[in-house]
Each structure stands twice: as C-alpha cells, then as structure tokens.
Length: 289
Image (cartoon, rainbow, N blue to C red; front, side, top):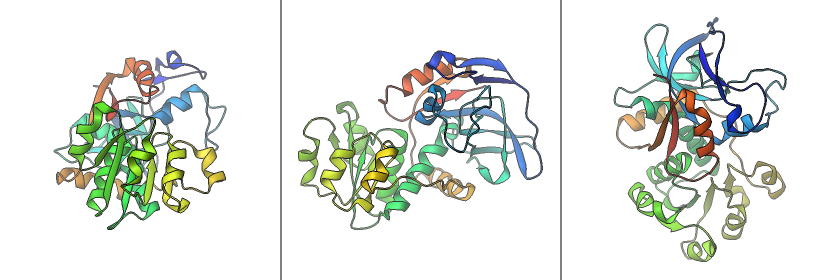
C-alpha cells in the first residue's frame, strides 16, 4: 500500500510517499481502506522528533495520522481514530475505535472530525462546563476551538472566542462573542468575566490572569507547564461511543465542522508546513482517493 511516512525525524520534507506492507486485521480488529485522514499538530510534532512515552522509539518507518474515514473490508463507511498510521491506504484498529459515518457527512469532514470533536468534548467534560458558565476559548477558529465553542453553547454556557481579525465573523456565526487576540487581550476580555478556559493557542499567561480557579483552566498546548501551574490537560478518553454521539450531533445539524483545505496524500509535507503555522480556520485533511 502507499503511505506518507518518514524514516527519520526532521522538517516536513522527510515525509515521503513509500510502499509499505498492507496490514491485516486480527481478532477484535477492523481494517479500513482510508479515503481521508486529518492532519494535526500532534502529527507534525511526531515527525519533527517528539516521541510520546507510549510509542516505541525504534519503530521505523513511521506513518503519522491518528484520525481517518474510509470503508471497512465488509463495506461499512466509518470514521475512527488510532495513535498512528492513518496517512496510508489501509489502517487496522480495534473495532471499538470506529463508528458509522453519517450519510450526510462528507468524506473530508469525516476524515478530520475525530480529533477536534473528541478533544473539545473531553476538554469541556473535564472543566464541567454548563449553564451559568462563561467559557473562554483561545484559538477558537481552529478545529478543536470550532467544536468547543459549539458544544459549550449547546451545554448552556456563554462563549468568548479569541482569533485573528479575519475570523471574527466566523466565530460570531458559531455563537461566540469574538475577541481579537494579541496585545491587550486580557483587558478586552476581563469585563466578560470568564469562569473557565480552553487554551488551544498557547495563551496560558492570559488565562491564569483572567481565571483564578486553576481547576477550570485546560491547555492543549503547554503540557509541561500545566503540571507546574496546577491546571488541566485532556486525558486519553477518546472512545467509539463518544465519537458516535458527536457524529450524531453533526448529522442532526447541531454541530458544524469547517474544512480549510484538502491535500493529496503525496502532498502531506505541504499540509505539515501549513499546520505548523498554527494559523487558519478549521481543519486540514489528506485525501487518498
């Protein structure tokens, strides 16, 4: 099978199209012919040389990608998640890591939906966001932020979203009070009195200044500092059941998901260059068909 993989860590150019052995499914597993796969900062960090403690440091080549959509060997259209290996024509995962793709969900959305939707859902669950809360979402125009804004609104919270000037109308369309990030951000937000924060953009100092209860601050960016500051990070709580519920919200029209750009598999390096800018609205996706 074809896969976008790397044989050593480095800049985006180390990602190359390689011929790899096609995997086979074992007991309790499912094999999916991948049609689309999401691109995340996690993938770029892995490619650049970061190795999470739960991954083998000596397994090469490595295929990035931990969210995908495609068709199982028995013909079911699904979306799902993994740790690695989604930038490939086939992927094998435990059967409980996929769920049915709603018929109304386009393939590009399905391939990029899992990580942003589940991460946002887990973050709000950790922070116990609900009626009476005012949630501040930094980097609200990205894939996680987009979903976090909407889920918080569905939970009855007021939502403040920070983003560039170009994305203010977009945030407003999602139901957030938009605020331009940059110098003076704390002063622009203070009167809105946030009670909880999801930091998708590395705005931890502002978050600590605005919300005194550190148990209600969660960062997706600064994990090393989180422990020292006594704030939250997202636990490994992805599940097929959680994903199914979120996909159902999309199918009901209660949750939207923006795709910024789709790249062909052979242009995965270009997708990594773009994701590493940490700017832009919505999700980047690889298309394999």
